[in-house]
Amino acid sequence: GCGLGQCGACTVHVDGVAARACVIPAHGVAGRSITTLEGLGNKEHWHPVQAAFEQAQAAQCGYCLNGMVMQTAALLAREPQPSEARVRAELSGNLCRCGTHVEILQAVALAAASQKPAG
Image: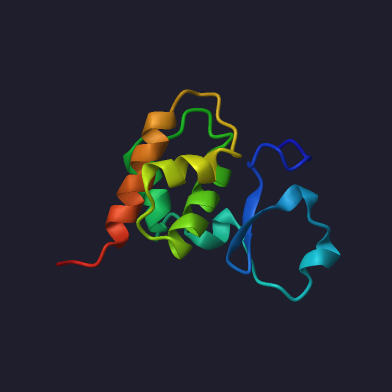
């Protein structure tokens, strides 16, 4: 990552809210719940957002992927069916230069659809 909180690659969840790990001092999160990408899911049981990003082939270089997944998971946890405009706004602070923006939007839509109750 950038070490300045500008790229979003280091995004983690602090008490369920997306935050840039590189600018949070350790004493600032003492006693709080921290979730990293590794805590979101794993190879045996992917989180729906991770599965959607894989299905949509939303990563090329992988630099932004962790941050995009974590930011998306936090968004969908509080807003299960966001509009495309909301998704774009939410992910605007996560830098991606690979040109997979369409696939990233598709991944978010897939993840949101996978959370919809049947019926």
